[in-house]
Structure formats: C-alpha cells, structure tokens
Amino acid sequence: MILSTPLPTFIFQWWYSNSQNSRKYQLYQSMDFPLHFRCPISMELMKDPVTISTGVTYERKNIEKWFYTCKKKTCPATMQVIHSFHMTPNHTLKRLIVAWQNGKSQSNSNTCPAYSMKHDELVALLNTIESSPFKVSSLKKVKSIVELGDHDVKDDFKKCGGVEVLVRIIQQVLIESSDFVTFRACEEALSLLIKLPIVLEEEETIKILLQPGCMKSMAIMLQRGSAEARFCTISIFQRITKSDCQWNVVIEDQGIGFFKSLMEIVSDEICSKASSCALQVLIDILEKSKKSRLKAIEAGAMCTLIEILPDSSKSKSEKIMYLIKMLCECADGRMGFIEHGLGVAAITKKILNISNVGTKIGVKILSLICNSHPTDKVLDDMLMYGAVKKLVALLHIGGSSTTKERVLKILKLHGDKWKRNPCFPSELKNYLGMESDSL
Image 1 (cartoon, one colour):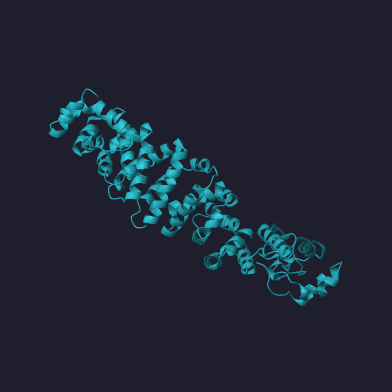
Image 2: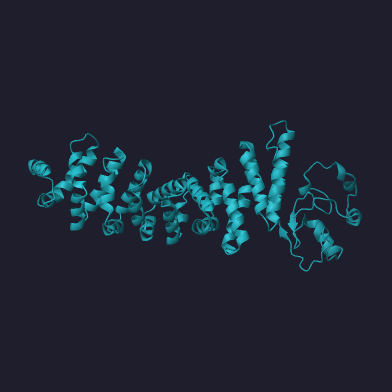
C-alpha cells in the first residue's frame, strides 16, 4: 500500500541529510504529481518502485539506502521490524507512473487531455487492488466508475493497465482455487471486464485474455462460479470469438469438463441470454476445429442439443440445428444422433415450421444420417414422425435446388422401404410410384 500521509519528521531529516540534492526537500510542497506516485521516504516521483514485506512501496535506491547503508531493520512508514529484506518490483505502479507522465506531456503540448477526469481515482484504486489482499471493495468502486463513465473513462482504465490487473486477479484462482476471498475477487474482476465492450474488441487486450493461465482460470469459473460469474465468463468468451486471434488453439487444450460446462449453460432455462451466448461460443469453436467437435460429442453435446431443440425459439432452434449438423459431420456425432432415439422426431418438428434456414439445415442433417447406413429404427422414425411426408412436400415448394437434390437422394435410397410400410400414407404411395423411374 502506498503511504498517503507524510512520514515522521526524523525520516525526512534522515533523507535530507543523506540526499545529494537538499533543495528537493524545499520543493516538496510544490510537487504536482499524484501522492500515490511519491516515494514515502523522499516524496519524489518514483522511477523504480519496489514493495517490501510490509506491503509499502518505495523508490528502490531510497529503501536500499535505508536498509544497507543506514543498517535499519524497520519499515520507514510503519516502523514494523523487518525480517525479510526481499523487494518485489511494483510493475503496475511503474506502468501507471509512465502513463501519467505521457498524459501530462501531451497535455502540456496543447493537445487534448489523454486521460479522463477519473484518472487519479482509477490510479489510486488500481494500486490498492494490487497491494491489498482485500480486493473486492476496490473492484466494486472501479466498476462503478467504469459503468457511469464514458468512452474516455474506459479507455483510461486500459491505459492504466487495468485489464492486466484484472487478469492477474483472475489467474489467482489457479493457485488458490479453494479460497473464498480469491474466488469472490475473481468473480468481481470478471463482472468488471464485461463492462468494457470497446476494450475487449481490441487485439492487444484479446491477446492478454488468451494467456493460458487466464483461459484456464475462466474455464474454472465456467464450471464452479456463481450464475452471474458464469454469465460474465461466457460473455467474455463470446467477445473473444469475434476477434481474429487464433484462440481455438487455446480452447483445444481444455478438457472435456470445459465443454460439459458450456452444455450446462446452453441448457439453462433461467438465463436465456447466457444460453444464447453459450450456443454462439460453441458454434465459433466447432466451426474452426474438428478436434473440438469430438470433445463436444464426448461431453454429451448431441444428447443435450436434441433434448432442448423441441421447445426452443426460432433463432435458438436454428443455432441448435446448425450445431447438430456440424456434429453429424463426424461419424461419432451421427452415432450419437442415432443412439439418442428422439433425434429424428426433434428435427422433423422443425422442418417447414421455423424458417427456410431451419428447413435447409434439417434436411442436411437427415441426409447425413440417411447416407451413412441408418438403422431400421431411424427409417421407421422418419416415416412415423412425418419426416418422409415433409421431404415429399419439399419437392413441390420453391427453394434451394441443393435441398431438393438432397431430398431426391434420400427418397431414392430408401423410398422402396417406406412404400412397403403399412404406415406409409396412401397418397404418397401414388406420388412415389409416379416418380419411381426418376428416383
């Protein structure tokens, strides 16, 4: 923690007597830089800030002189006895100082101010978050500033290294996954990240989020976080997928548990927004990687998708059917579809009932199944649930020639079997008989 009040008089006397430039002390009251950027010993702007075991940050050369030249064994700010003289570079504070200096330089050059009016407050809060074990309250304050702020505030947060700070908090879950305080801080960091839609579209920030540690931590939150944390996480994943970064390589390193967590959110009936986000994330993952399709199948994706399809809305149905189609392009996916038992019924219900897109995808799914040695049960189901009737109807409807070609191929392969079935509608027998030569 950076000291916000002057040190005892004797500390200044010590520094004054040891300083090569005593005029600095006389200029102390006229300094115009933020208090948090000052070394608590010299009150000068820090260039190489380091944090000691008591949590206080100093300029390296000043605290080294205190310890090694003057042989002191206490913290100058708190006067606590020091048992370890280890110093940790405070990279975040250094970055904030450099950012402040650059902003001040631009301001002095008669350009528009580079930072928002909330800059100093953001800097102070970020420094507190980095140095304090109790981060949640400070994170909430930052989130409030960002929520109420405009584009300049959000941009300022990024320039201050805010995204990096949040990622470090999220990554702590990998080390202290069972610690409640760490978990709450991670959840709060995720809820702050989704308040930055503009930042999340930038490639530099995407690369930060794609760090293996961050991705693994978010996968943990997807599995074990609260409902709100899981929604925040899946929203971040959705924004990552919109970028051009090759993030799918990172996803492929995730275990089956990652896809199981996605499927749980997909089937969430309470938060439709989270469910829709999860569907889009799955689409983006599976479109780019066949390996991921196999992992999704192993995680039970086919079963989940078939079961939620019948009661889904139009837009959601199209996404679910598109996912089923991609999975059916794999042999394991087709086997999963056949083994479920209700796959044909679910797809048939949507054909000609939701949209041209839905119908086209539905026919493609049936084509994939029918062209790959379908079981007798599948063919019987297609007849019983009305799929054959709808396929024949599609021949009379204007539309995609590709779809009609698929319908004709299906009827050519299995028409004779269906015509012999006693459940086959008599009016369709005549139609297929008329078309038998062309089939």
